[in-house]
Image 1 (cartoon, helix red, strand yellow):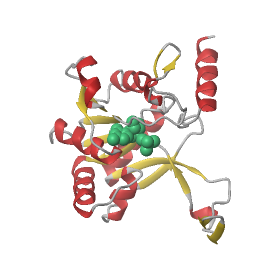
Image 2: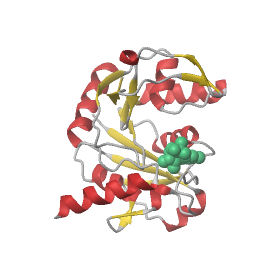
Image 3: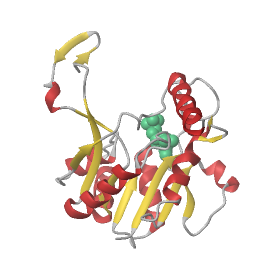
Length: 221
Ligand code: C5P
C-alpha cells in the first residue's frame, strides 16, 4: 500500500504569546515540526511526506521527492486539502499528523495503517479521565457519559478517497472540523478508534515544551 503523510503547519497562532508559531520553536536544538517530519521520512512504510507551511516560508524550504512543502490555506482543513491536492491521487492511504506531536509511537502508526487499509479510517484516542460538561457561559447545560468519550490524537489515517471526499464536502458545506475524523464520520464513513498513547501529547503551552525537553534529554542521556 502506498502511504502519504500530511503535516499541517501553516498556522500562525501561538498560545505561547511569542512571535514564532509553536511548530517552529526549537526542541532539542531543532524545530519541533522537523522531529515529526524526520520520523515519518525514516519510516519505510511512508512513500511521501507533504508539509503545509505559510506561503511566506516556502522559499526557505528544500523540496525532495519524498519530502515536499506546499503553501497552506486559511484554516487547518484547507491546508490539509491543499496538500492532498498537491499530492495527486496515487496514494492508497493518507495519514494526517499534528506538527506539534513529536512523540507518536511507530507501532501505533503502523497499526493505524493496517486498520485503515482494512476499514477505511482509523485514529488513536485516549479514554477521558475528567468529567466533561457542555457549558454555556458559566452554566452547565449537559454532561455526556464519560464512558462514551474519547480524546483524539494523531496520526489519523484514511483511505485517500474517503479523506478527499470528506474535505471537499466540508468545504462545499462551509463546515470547519477540528480534526479529519470528525469530517469522515459526519459524511457517513466508519472511523475505527485504536488505543492512543499518553506520551503522544500535543505541545500546546510552554509547560508542554518543558516536558518535551525533559523527555528528549532523558532519551539521549
Ligand atoms: O491552531 P490550531 O492548533 O488549530 O492548528 C492546528 C494545526 O493546523 C497546526 O499545526 C497549525 O500549524 C495548522 N494550521 C494550518 N493552516 C492554517 C491553520 C492551522 O496548517 N491555516
